[in-house]
Image 1 (cartoon, rainbow, N blue to C red):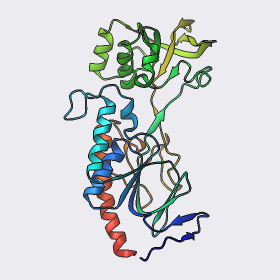
Image 2 (cartoon, rainbow, N blue to C red):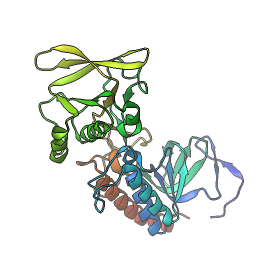
Image 3 (cartoon, rainbow, N blue to C red):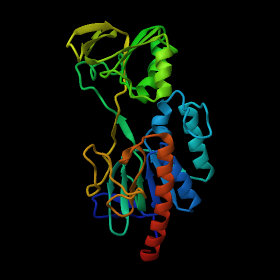
Length: 330
């Protein structure tokens, strides 16, 4: 197809530069799933661009220490993210720091619009936008975000050195963050509504053996309280006897799960009741040429190694799809 530098109006209502903006594959999201997809796409000789609105790594960046990724007994999330990105770039993967605002599926090709108005044509799209932390939706949570309320211990733990903090949650993330914060804070309270943690047994054993951590069982947080200097207490309630009290604290860290970042998922792609994209084992969505991987996809386990596996599968499947499209459309 002959290309030109002239801007051409298309039916979507904005302009697209034809030259150098037609890709075999556009990957949206630079976490472990997206970066692995980039590696395999480049190995398959696909003209590929990966677009990430923040730094590569996704949720990995927020992990102080990763101990369950094969080949690394101990590695920080930031370091592992860098290794993923560097590996992808050794194959010449184009990585752009920008934000996608819309994906429009098409019969001959798909269109991807960036926040700056640029539009890319592509045969295939891999959506790897991951998830975002769930919120408690209690008084004070939004008001004091960044003023004592945090969703990332690695990011904000430094500000609570030798102070008292509360960690809300009982899963792997909550346990990992509580253990990390125990290295910095003088006291860590874990608030959990059940009588046992949902974290893996190794993490549970570490939490129990850490003298700085105290778990408040059968307890929920009903409000976050603050003064002129920021957060100074949390309002708690025992779910068994309804006892209520206030616990003084300097900070609150919330780890109660994640919600899928499905805002960019086009209409016509099937979602489950929780908003995760439904795919088959090939990571194919209900729209041909559009794939969902990583924490955005409905699955049993949400781990770095599983996301990387998704990226591999989707890129290999996309490569076959792209070749078939090239044979059909020029």
